[in-house]
Length: 335
Image (cartoon, rainbow, N blue to C red; front, side, top):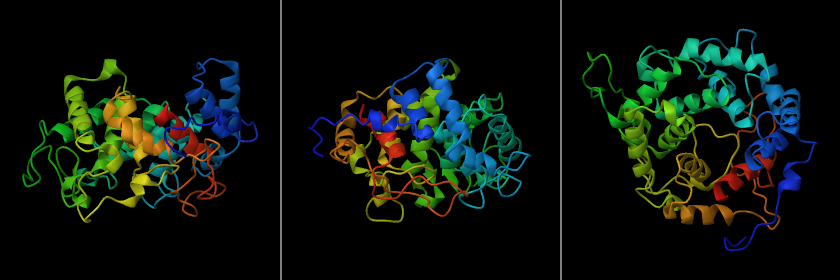
């Protein structure tokens, strides 16, 4: 659909009671029902009783982890880290099901290090921007806020600005970069030591969810640098550094659900909107591109998925077909 054409209203489709998950998110995020609204509470409870939230929670071990104990990064994509990220994007909330709170506490106990890094391996070298941002954002969304998250956000800010973090070669330093998270401003070993916009999107999305009253001067500076980085190119082009390729990954333009470490353009826009840049003219091309991917009914297709890699009973729909989860994401980006 041309970007200049007004999109039909997909809300009646999104609000269909047969699918309580998308209905709940549409009421919460599109119609902005207050948390104590009876219709929203009813929809939230229904979304926790049936559909993906219920299926993912049913696969959880009573101790609060998925698949195997420990930091929960492996195996992809059914272990603890991925379960929490998916639950957060589905709108799961600790107040609606105590198992959500139990899982949040588990990952804080087993994946968060004293200096604030979330680690895939229980060692500081196991940290990465995408993991840090994803878990910080997910825990806030899930209602799993905990005083220990202050250290996680502080490390995340330092990892962006470099303040107080030694270069990777200073092995004796108490706080330093590593081969993976190898330098400031989103530098990543997996991106040939260049800044990684996938990681940047996760980090900035998490900062956008942190209440302004809790943002320290260091966090404010990290946000400033991160926004500057994401706007260093036209986001519609995704022309950020591509360490191992001559051009950007095609996955930038494949909109998906859920969103793990592979990042799409929608998530970049989500992060910038959350940080107050929704009306920035530098987002105009990205928003036009997003709007142009809707069909004639104002619905967006699922283009990137994890079919066959998730939990039993969890299905987010067929690829290349109109998808409620993706449509909700896209409407928030173009709104």
